[in-house]
Amino acid sequence: MNLEVRATGLRAMRQKHGLTQRELAQSLGVSQNYIPALESGARKPGPQLRQLLMRHFGCGFEELFQVVMVNPETSQEQVLTPQHGQRRPA
Image 1 (tube, helix red, strand yellow):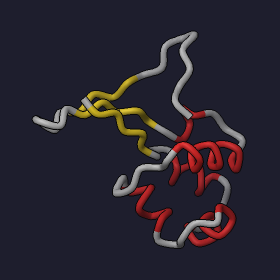
Image 2 (cartoon, one colour; image 1 turned 135 degrees about the vertical axis):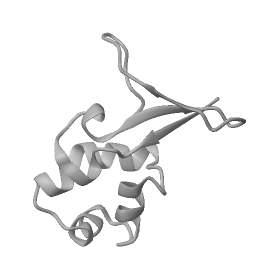
Image 3 (cartoon, rainbow, N blue to C red; image 1 turned 180 degrees about the vertical axis):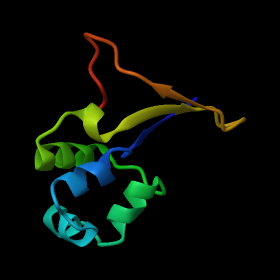
Image 4 (cartoon, rainbow, N blue to C red; image 1 turned 90 degrees about the horizontal axis):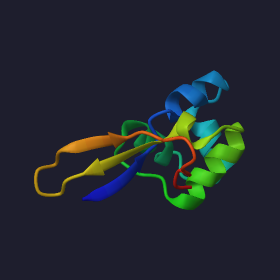
């Protein structure tokens, strides 16, 4: 099984803050094409970018990201939900 962290809440959070993809990319110091790739799920944010995004928007992990367990043989996916008392990956 593989674990993936997806930026499923990024588009909504960016729009809530009135930012364009270009503006967000510039403020984070990433390429302009990286933000749409994150929002579409084509790219997965690494730990440093996840931390940067949470600080940028002043929000928690669950508001921006989703953890998905993927079976590499069948491509079957299972979304993992947080349980009380457990920390989510950064």
